[in-house]
Every structure is written in structure tokens, then in C-alpha cells.
Image 1 (cartoon, rainbow, N blue to C red):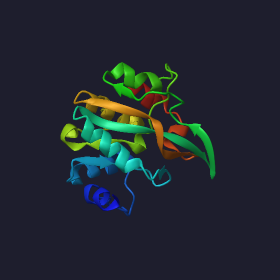
Image 2 (cartoon, helix red, strand yellow):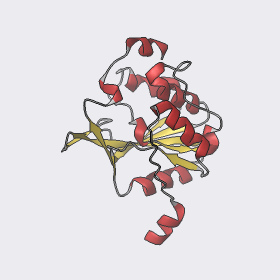
Image 3 (spheres, rainbow, N blue to C red):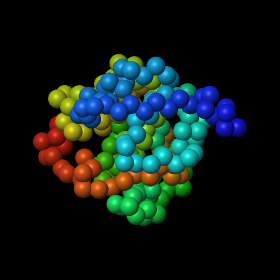
Length: 184
């Protein structure tokens, strides 16, 4: 029932003006969050209508999960491509070790990494973790954050698409910074 769904899910949209750098914004969200679950979502991506209920159901079903992410259909400009960002795989993946998490980032896997913009985090596992571009990989500090969170609990990557991820020239991942890659 729709009413029950809305009693369990509170969506709060915060428009920060002026905008903060991504790492600072993420850290403020972690500090401000009062609920057990947190989703950060980029303003140019789209949630499927089942996104919140699917991820919330999975988190409640498995208390060991520190985070969950979902596959995403790629949007190129205004064109829905039907291609899946993480690739086409049949079974959900449980990520328990840093190597499993990093292989897709280093392109050592047939599966691409889950879009970090669409993760749901269990705040009791996040505790005092924060992103830190100086100590943790520069522009890749979100990956370092995820690796530290993986020490607190497992991740689950859903094979089914529950979001749409827009790829454009301004995506942070569209440019490489060798110095930051080395820091990572």
C-alpha cells in the first residue's frame, strides 16, 4: 500500500546555495542525517519508481549490509540507451572484500562499478566515517570512503535496474586526474 510506503520513507530535498564541493556536501549530509538510511542522489540522474522501496526492503532484510546500490540504465544526453551501467549480470552481488569492490574500478572485471550517486547507506555502519580528498584519494575520496565503510559491513549490488544514470561531459568521471588516481 502506498500509504505504508510513505510512512517508512522520508524524502528530504535540500538545495544548497551556494553549492559546496562534492566531498564537503556529502560530509554535511552524513552529519545532518537523523534516519537509519541515507541516499544521496545526483540531480541529473533519475530514480525508478521502485528505487526506494526496493533498496529499503533489501536493507531491512539483511542487517549485515552497510550499503546497497543498484544497476542503472545509461542516459546519453536525452537518449535512454537501454545499456546498463554496471553491465548485464544475472545475480545480485555481495561485496565483502576491498578487492571485489576495486576490481570494477580498475577495469579488471566484466562488471562495472555501481554508480556511487545511487547508494543507500545504513547510518549505524557509517558512524564517524567522512570523505577526505587530502588523505583519501583526491577526487576519488568517495571510493576511499566506500572502502572504509566496507570494513563495517557488506555491500550489495543489485543486478536489476532501479535508476537511470546520465552520462555527459561534465561527469566527474569523464576526466582523469593521474595525481588523484595515484593517491587512491
